[in-house]
Figure 1 (cartoon, helix red, strand yellow):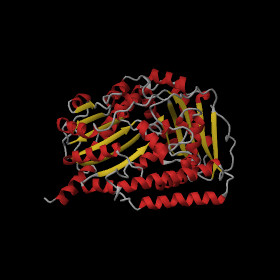
Figure 2 (cartoon, rainbow, N blue to C red):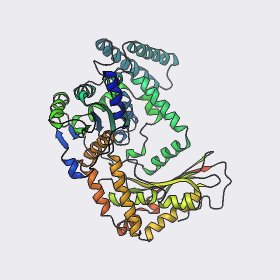
Figure 3 (cartoon, one colour):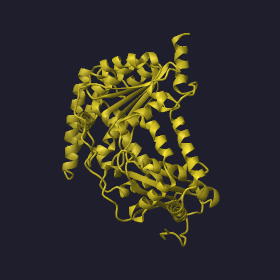
Figure 4 (cartoon, rainbow, N blue to C red):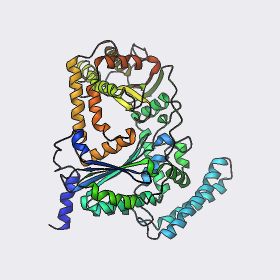
Length: 510
């Protein structure tokens, strides 16, 4: 078999096409196959031996998202994600020594232009134009040294698949998969990327992000989510968008990105998981050799700001030509709290599948909603977050109708015990969902690394099922009665300008 054929077969495996199902998904089985090592510099590495196919998946969890941004630099964590695969001092450049000088020239020119633009808004237009031209000339010079997409091409040429990254309100993650005989190549590429990041094409990517934001704001649902979170959170950074505010995006600089990277992309703030046809005894020495080069730095201190207790209902109403949408959220503790399992059971009760309460009531019986459900841990799990409900109307129905129907279901949960059969069905679905979430190397790497970062123990992936099994109907009623209060509620809705007002519109039915 030639190398080309091998890569085709391995690629199919990486995409999950012929990976067999794992026979045992219990904690005891995984404890025999998972090894955790914390390097001297603070980096945590998990290796899960899963030799069903000659491939492995990598997942890096950096414990920083938009939660560590402040006014002026919102969107910066997401910007760094966009820079992730631009290369290193050796990859993605034709001459790094010259490129480095060109990048410094870019930043000096940009700082001069940005200062004139922001600090002297009534300055001389000609001066601003000259400074902007100098900055753009510096950009053009640096571009000559760039080898586009070289980092990703190296991964693809070696049989890699699924190269991607994402940013949330509390984490930034990077992942892809490779043949198992490419472990050392992976270790070199990733350690170089963390050790020698190069912010090439920063301002080009900033333009891309600004366009992403404009696209998001052009959608009614995107506008609703932004206003909803900004209303639910008045102090905590959960309230500002991951993608950043427009004025901040217009001013973010490479200097800002370097400072942010140096503070938060430290080994002690990173968890890496490797899952697949790898042996810990062979892989960990390679990881030590390459990732041990990263200099140890202090782990960032915990976030200071906590959201103050909400004392009054907050309501956001958007009037759009789109279909009506309704959502409401209630503040609740973080996922680390002991009551999280009960919230997850409640979410499954109202939201999971065609037997869920909201589906049966709003979609099947009343036919006022095209879709409906609940959400838990929004917009993140690390800090106190929101539990909520949502629905999208069917033609001719209003957001107020959706609200009233959802409130009826909330009152039912508050006042009536859940039948044992219904509770057992929810718990069974939770177990099935866990098995599905561990179905591929990439999904398992995500679960292990995230649990290790959030809870300090990857075993929580499995123990959450035991916690769900212990949830009682009485617990859920108590939780509902202490959480689903009008004073703790934030409402977001889209009222359609194409619908005539109804008698119930705007009336608060509890």
